[in-house]
Length: 248
Image 1 (cartoon, one colour):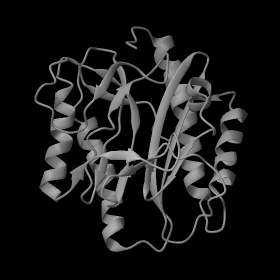
Image 2 (image 1 turned 135 degrees about the vertical axis):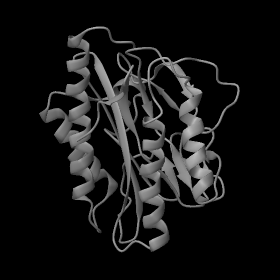
Image 3 (image 1 turned 90 degrees about the horizontal axis):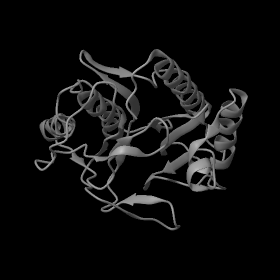
Image 4 (image 1 turned 90 degrees about the vertical axis):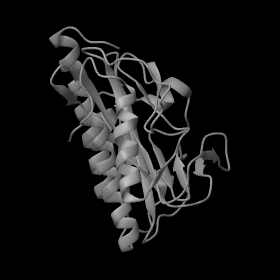
């Protein structure tokens, strides 16, 4: 989606705010002893209270309102009877639709007590995402995003998952431009256009580089089982930089 009017921008900000608040509330609700289904139910009720529809179920018939992945799972985890416990590394991905507009956001959370190593990974996962966000401006290359994230990862001794990419979003959950690398891809030649709407969602890891199939048709895990985090925002590109649509 490329927006060219204030109505589109306001509609995207509205759904962006809804998914951001939902994600924030789900993160605050995390506690040992609850199941991932109970956590998902919280997200579902919050979205429905705002009149929004969960995008994974709407678009792909995903068996949940949100994706909840408890490490070693890193993406597309199905909410179910898994009981959360202290020390778990939990990724929550919230995407939804309202009035024909979609937004997508995600965050990794550590259920206390976390180790200093994992706490640093989580802090740096967010910093890696912002390195990509801060590289965005109309006229720049899409490849600048992955180059900025890769530079951050290399400088700080991390790896990046290289088969889970960012994507266009707006009128659908996944749109053009597809497969926006959050790692350095010298073959990327596409340009960022004024008003382009897309996500930035790097997966920062302590040694893994690929996502592999988990125990069902949806869930993905890190190939070497090394701790991995993901942070995600939906944004619109302008000549002055990125306007983040999913800030709580």
